Image (cartoon, rainbow, N blue to C red):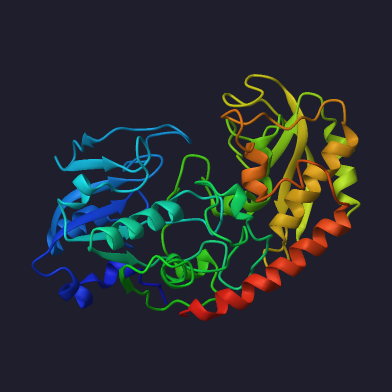
Length: 380
């Protein structure tokens, strides 16, 4: 039976929007199972007055990290307020145009993903300016049972990791909203519109919903599974596959011997994954137009696969094999942490402080710690 997302149940929650001016945070993933956009649904069912854009834009037309200004959406003639430009938190001027702010967006089950912090900042603004916040729930595309990662050290808080949580949290976006609101003290007026026909053990394919790429470098569900592991390579001189047809599923550099790297990784016998020697030439981003040797990560068993352990192992091995070539990139802003620190939630990976066994012990311990917190906010 097909899962019904939150937006498909809006008529059952019409009273939330009655006699209110409504703002909407969304992007191309905001659709129902018949491909009707959330923007069009909200225009029909509510007094939709403005749109709010996360990273990559309302129409998904911007690459990672590209900032945008407020603009008029040519399809609807509605004002689009940017939440990935000069401000990432809705301002008083923006909030004065609405009584209620809704959000319908597909995230990917990762602490790194900026959409969940766009949600957090929007909830903070609703609290500050006494507005209501509505989250339309959607499936977690990499599953809601599996949890893994180290808990973010808040000294390394950023827009790719804001709260004390692991990389893979195993929650839907509505469950996250509940946790942000209660555990992390936002305290806004929160309305959660749940899904129907959804259980925690469902894969995205089980939901029978259409997959729409939530950002330019997450084209497939396979990519989403790899992302929690290989995203940490963003903070190094190793390509994480941006500029190829397999972003985050391939990793390498011009100085890597793909056969040597694949053999070393496969000897670790990591669960649910196989590494194949791979050669690629990124068309943009790091190592642009240079032939890279490396590996393609093939997830052979999604339930057994441990993306964070896999990613940390990949970085650990490449650093051991090529100590004179591997480099951690400098911070974007002098005096602040580097990207590797932000993505790993601390400085211990950059400093190469622990053995792989010690790193795995950290992950096991902190995953268990978070599961106790997470259990309080599960809905399904």
